[in-house]
Each structure stands twice: as structure tokens, then as C-alpha cells.
Image (cartoon, rainbow, N blue to C red; front, side, top):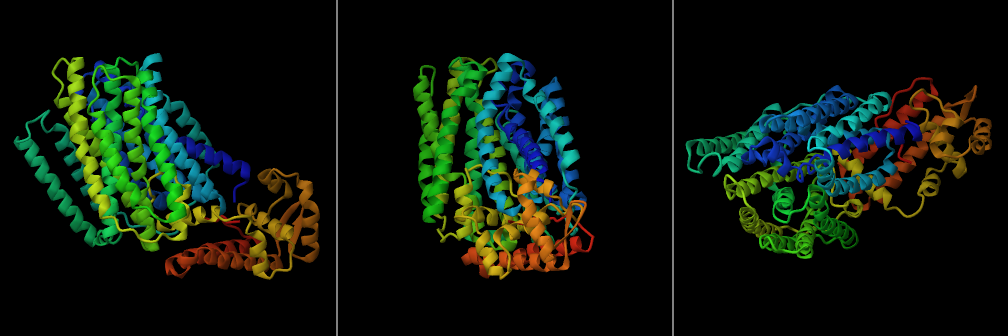
Length: 633
């Protein structure tokens, strides 16, 4: 187990990497008008955002498997390097085509960063502490949504739009240096089967359909052979994708999940919410700058009401869901509010005041926030634990895919209404048409939400809801890892320290301080088989002298051996630690209540317990390995 100082350093680097990836989903929105003025290619405007989202979507599916094959440290570092290459050349681009191409490279890195970051945190953070990091990660994604347009505007006004990309480079270099030095080299013992064909087919189909929605009516007439051929080809690819997934050994998106009405409805809802959210946010800065005369920085600031509204209802809905277990009301009501917000946005014109515009944005944000986290909560509540990973990542995948389509469709509508030489009235007409045609998306979301079946929530799912701010990193596709997130969220909700109860359950004749110190010695012994009191002091920020009487007593009782200040388990110490792990296992299963009868959950908890016991035995005999799952207390 890593020391607390090293653990905090690693987590800080990982979260910085995730922040970079999350920021780049929205940072270009306020810079788009300036980018078009500089590089031209207004008809390709949507692809600056869409290329990033599509590439990110595909990489989130691939990177988890690559991490299992080559090790998560290598996968994380490769993702950072891809992101840095894409960032540098995006800033260097001298045409819209090159910018779009390197935004795709950047998206590959961003998708890899977000998924591998979650996996690495699971490697270095004890299970009990993971819940608070999940909440911090969700909050960070919310901050990124707020800060993205604002930072993009600041760079445009004070430096250049190119700095929206260049800013990633020094920060990314810091992440690489810390990660290369500090990340543990943990590699999966299994050899995953990667569904290359399925991933290729869905990538081609998604790209084709996005091109249809982006080029139709702008580059080519809707009835042109190019658009019709591309549409037909994309549909054929989708059909082939379904056929491949039905036969794949480890499918990217198992078709059996869609046999359940709940998963199907939640997936459609997730797609629609992603469509409306990014589609709406991306083009608002263009209106604010071109029509209301705001600077790039001011347009970023004026976007804050939308995000504030979104954060309010996202956090409120999570807390209410965790207390009541009722979730259907939020997407039903939220969809109606979202529809009202989209319609109100369609009434914006040259004379609309700042306060009215802000009010309309708040309405739209409130509606989006009500709907954001419900699909994830629903699938985590109804999926078998063996499908928890693919179900969670499937919903994340469809939300990001919906965002890609939303940006493309909104962009097509927007640019098709602009003349060769745009004027303020033409921008008003474009924004009016775009939001007016988008309003039915809210109605569609309402209809879909009506079909959502409300099933009593598991205790663990309530815990996930309460710790989620509505923003979350993509699912990893790893059911064990997703299950650990669920358990960590539930554990975080426990009132008081469960340590005394676990100690009493074990029947071990130790004081709480003695049992606690045994666990700390285990945690700090995994790297080299022994631990010093100074290492424990650095992790817990408590003077080493405080632990000396307890350590001496454990030596006297025969639980530990000591040489030159390095403590190691004896056979008795290993047996005692084994009993503590057994008590932790039974306490955890009892705490999970409704979930404890699920064989997959029990198997996962047993696997964690066996790893802890195996590592402690190896340490007592002078052999040691790096545990893939840290001790949970």
C-alpha cells in the first residue's frame, strides 16, 4: 500500500489529468466564433467539438481493456501523451481540417485519461476512502463545465484562442512526471478479449451518422446521393454491429441488456439528455458574442446561470433520491422544464436583456440537472452485479454519443440559417430556429421518462445517488471496479467508525488501538514486506512516538517481529489479521443488507478478503506482492 503522502500526490496528478480532459469538452465553445474568423470553415464549426467527443467515446471503450493487457500505468501515460500531442497540434493548426483532426487525437487521450484515472484511483486509494474521492471527482466535472467556457473566453481576449490548447501542455507534463515516478505498476492477471470488430463498426456508424447530420443541408442537399448513401451505409453498419455483439465473447455493449425495459429506457434518456446539454451549451457563446456584443470572457461568465441551475437540481435530486428511493419524478418534471427552457431560448433576440437571458438559461439548466444522473442510478439499481460495469459504461457511452449528435445537429441547423456574410439579424434567426427545433427533444425526453419503471432502490444505490453531483467520469466497463465504487459510496454513509464493531465480531483479544496498528502495518508493508512507525506517522500525520507503546506490546504478545525499526507479521500476527479480515467481510455483507444475497457481490467481497489474507501471509514469510485491492479499513 502506498503511503498517505504518495497516495495524495498520485491522486492530485490523476485528478489534474481528469480535469484537463473534462475541460476540453467545453473550453472551445466561447472560442469558436474567433476560431472561425481566423481559420474560416464555418460550415465545419460543429466538428471542432464533435471530433473530440466521438474520439473520446470510442477510447473510453478501448482503454480499460488496454489497461488490463499492458498495465494501467502504461495506459494512463499513453493517454496523457496522446492528449498532449493533440493539444499542441490543435493550437498549431492553420486550417479547420487540421484542427478537427488533432481535436480527435486530443479526444482519444481525453477518453483514456478519464477511464484509466478511475482505475488507478482504485489501485492506490483504500476502499473506505474511495467514496469521498468519487464525490470530489463529480464536483470537479461540474467545475470543468463551469470553467471551460470561462477559460476559453479569457484566453481569446487576453492571449489567443490557441492558448485554449497550449495551456494543457505544461499541466500535462507535470502529470506525466508525477505519474511516471509515483504510479504503481499494477497489471491485471486476466487476459481480456477485446471486441475490436464491434468497436470498429460502432465507430464507423457513429461517424457516418454524425456526418449525415452535419453535412445534410449544408455541404450537400438532403436528397443528394452522398447523404443518402452515407445514411444507408451507417444504418447497415449499425445492424452489423448488433449482429457482431450478439456473437462476441466479451461484447462492447451486450445486447442482452436491452431485453430489460429499464435499461433500454434509461439508455434512450441518457442519449437525449446528452444531446440537449452539449448541443445547447456549444452555440450559446456565439449568440452572446455576435448578437449581444459580449466579449469572449463575458460570454463565458454569462453562461454561469445555466450551469448553476444544472448543479442545483443535480445535487438536490441526488439527495432526495437517496432519502426517498423515488427517482422517476425527476426526469418527468425535468424534461418539461427542459422543454420550457429550450423554447424560451428560441425567443432570444437583439434586445433581450442580460437578466432575461440569464433567467432562460437557469430554466434550461434546472431541467437538465433533474435528468442527468437518473439513468446511471437506474441501471446500477437494476443490473446484475456481473453486468454492473458494462451497464454503467453503456449508459455513459450513449450519453457522450448523444452529445456528439447534439452538437452536430444543432450546428447544422445553426449554420444552415446563416448567409455567406452573417449579420446580427441572421444570427438571431439562426439561434431562434435552432432552439425552436430543439424544443421537441425535451418532449421526447418527457415521453421516454414516462416509460421509466420505478423499482425500489438498493441501499448501495441510494448511497451512490447521495454522493453524486450529477457529473461523473465514464464507466470503466469493469464490473468489479464499478461494484467497488458502489460499496465505497455505501461505506461512506455509515455513521461512526465501524472498527470497534468489526473488532468485536472477530473475537480477537486485542484492544482497538492494537487492531488498528496491525492494519496500518499491513497497509504500509505491501511494497516491501515490512513497515516502520515513521511510515505510519507520515501517512496518518501523527507523531511516531504515539505508536511505540502499542507496537512494543504487540511485539511482546508475539504478533509482530522487529529488526532495525522494521516491523513484520509473525505467524500469529497473520492469523489474527486473517480473523480481522473475516470479520470485515461479514460486517460488510451484513451492511449491504439487500445486496448480500447476490452471489456476484459475495464473490467480489470474498476475492478482496482473499487478496488481503494472501498478502499478509506472504509478508510474514518475507515474500510480498503489490495488492491490487488495498485494505479497506
